[in-house]
Amino acid sequence: MQSNKLTFKKAKQIPIIDYLAGLGIAPAKVHGHDTWYFSPFRSERTPSFKVNTKLNLWYDHGTGEGGSILDLGAKLHKCTLTGFLHRLSANNIPDFSFHCPVKPEAHMINRLEVLSAADISNSDLVAYLQKRGIEPGTGRKYCREVDFRIGERSYKALGFQNRSGGYELRNAWFKGSSSPKDISFLTSGHAKIAVVEGFMDFLSLLQVDSNQVKALRSDSDFLVLNSLALIDRALPLLTGRDEVNLFLDNDAAAANAKLVLKDAGVQAYDRSGLYRQHKDLNEYLVKSAEQASMVSHPITRSRGPKR
Image (tube, rainbow, N blue to C red):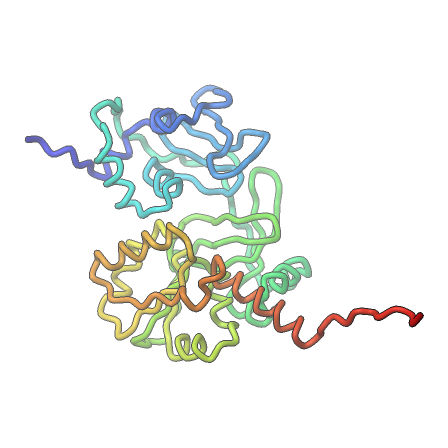
């Protein structure tokens, strides 16, 4: 019996537009080799998600992300690249019409381009840090003020660098990343390591005022996945550790990531119970600060005039 298991190389030959059609996602317009869709990741009035059928690559103008069908599937299904490959292999793959491998596009239209990175000074970015419960000093220590461009327009965002030189970018209205996409590893040579999904969670972990959390982050290295789809890249950094503490989100995607680690033989402690009533560490930090403020500044009701 012939194996139906796909290789990464063969999977990348599956036409992305055929895959999207199989999910019931129809194009909004077609212009030459570019097929445009309303983004499957958010609500929008103008289609900003493009598939180049000649190159068989997708690009999301709203976030600056893009790549092959594997990157798309991992993002859609909130799983790893390997997990999505297994999902594809389990489907009726022979029905897809394969074509020759394509070369990546040299210059993608309106791609995200980093122009410069400097110390954080922009008042809007400082205000955004404070809104997320992060002290400006903490933000300045680990992040940069990044000027980037999408098409002809330039913007500013907080930038958190990954180990390959790319940036995770955030401001009050934008969430995206520059190429290359990768994990971030902050090490001081400790045998203990803390794992978080995004850099806001990392900054939050440094600031949570809890004796238990303080003990867990003390004398620890830190691994920021920047996307659960990159968890496979984290495995070599987690094996053989004396202690692996997971501070992932409280959702199904994180639960799946924990299973991936378990299947890979990584012995880890799930610390999400410390903030089980919240979506993630940052929400826990913000809500905790709000509650502390209410306790220290209680609202007094006016009794009104005596009759």
